[in-house]
Amino acid sequence: MNARIGLDIGGTKTAALLVDDDGRALGEVVQPTDVTAPDRLVAAVVDTVDRALALAGATRLELVAAGVGVPGQVDPDTGTVRMAVNLNLREPYPLRHALQTALGVPVTLENDVRTAAWGAYHRANTARPLASLAYLSIGTGIAAGLVLGGRLYRGAGGMAGEIGHIPLDPSGPRCVCGSYGCLEAFAAGPAIAAYAAERLPAQDGAPLTTGQVYALADAGDPAAGHVIARAASYLARAVYLLVMAYDVEQVVLGGGVTRAGAAFERPLRRALAALRADSPLAAAMLPDEKIVVVPADFNAGVVGAVYLAEAERLPLAARR
Image 1 (cartoon, helix red, strand yellow):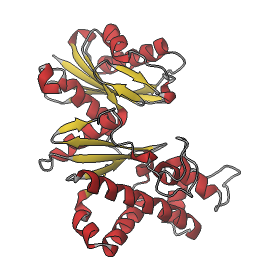
Image 2 (cartoon, one colour; image 1 turned 135 degrees about the horizontal axis):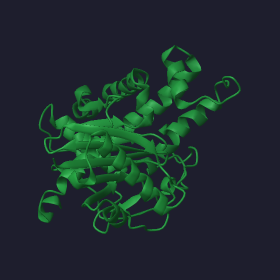
Image 3 (cartoon, one colour; image 1 turned 60 degrees about the vertical axis):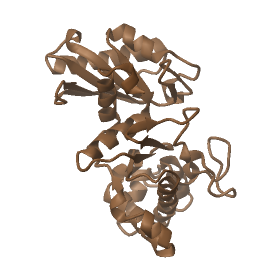
């Protein structure tokens, strides 16, 4: 048996999905990520791989390739990652080489949001063939991954899709990037919670989580409803921005904030409808069916990483 593994490495946990040559799932594991030092990070990832193999009754001898999604600025050509603050990898670190040496198989390394975009793209293609897609990740931060012409698009400097740091209102709150009024400062998870803390009482002495704010809004709390409607209006503008900038066939939304489910999706679709009502162009460019929210049980990152591992079976020219 030949097996491939996809790894979604986050600051707190690492998810792994092992599949056979036909794409059938053999084992799925989630374990804590050790970010105390680079060598300990690699050791923890390798342990996650070994546990997935053991769950499938397989060994490393049957592993042929690995795909890996990580936060931060990734250079897929050199296999280095930098500015991955959540992984404690601020300076360039040769993560691909370290994992290839430890596992003994080819490793494809990519930014986590682009990896999730790749997973979302392949999921969308099971319904109908697509050549282009934008994946908007809404969590601790906001960023987009782009698939154009059936290929991941990185941009000239590897920063394509970083729309979380586009200023939308210069009088808005300060963003972690240093600018004011960025999309991320209005609609990322921490921004939603911070805005809610100014308008809603704490529960049991603790500030409300983003999930709790969505739940309160969905239950009819007017103050929470205002907070969520504000975030949804900015997210709707981000979706419109992606459609107008890249003319993609589908926009898929994922990330931790979207796990609020219908409580997240309903206000977003109302905000999109408001854009359509104001503009015939928006009405033409933003049909409701173009916008998709991934199911809570679909891990786009780990699925995309599996497809990155699949690319290792192709000639180099076909992977570019």
